[in-house]
Length: 145
Image (cartoon, rainbow, N blue to C red; front, side, top):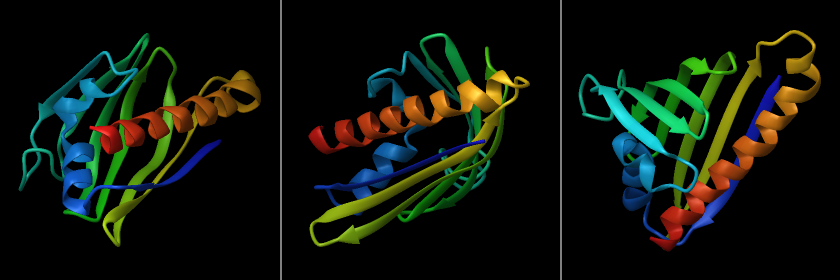
């Protein structure tokens, strides 16, 4: 099982940070993302609850469904499909809180790489490490934009 937990205080207002994180088609501006497409719009907002996005990072791809969209404080998602490694994703949750002139972002993701033995021993730890670094890069690029 992998668990990624990242906290970062970004020197931008909460609305700007939420907009950057919820602009699914715009994820290509983040380092490491080679393709990002909004496949289905959300029910109430384009990027809102129910939206389906396809994100490609090198050889890895994810299809993520937005499960929670509470502007500007929370966005939840689940990986419905991934490749080439099969992921059983249990939750993805991004919460934001205004702190002075900045925004505290807490990004968490839990799941499991579904390859017997290798997933438990190696791949889940690799997912934690690489996923954490990617989330940090995303947040840093929002801050420096």
